Length: 84
Image 1 (cartoon, rainbow, N blue to C red):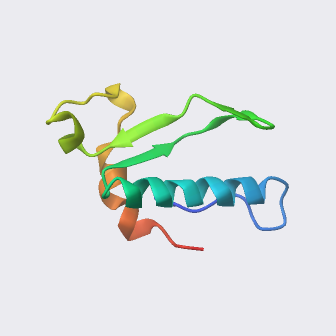
Image 2 (spheres, rainbow, N blue to C red):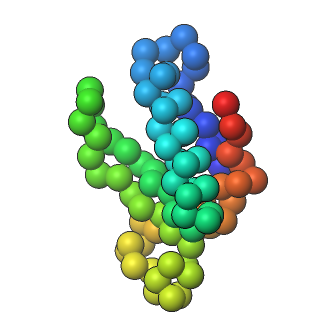
Image 3 (cartoon, rainbow, N blue to C red):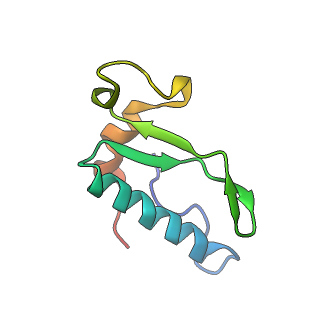
């Protein structure tokens, strides 16, 4: 799993990917390690179709965000996230 920007620093859009990685860090920290938003899509300044990833404890063991909720991603986030 790679929790950093998937573009190299000289590519167009790198600053946006860096910002989105930063927002995941803040979401994770502010939620006590329970939530991150991932899989942003869209173009320009409009981002759509995010996937909300939660620890299963958020829904009392229920998968409240459907099959797209990959709780193992939340569990491994701190191990793989690199602060920039």
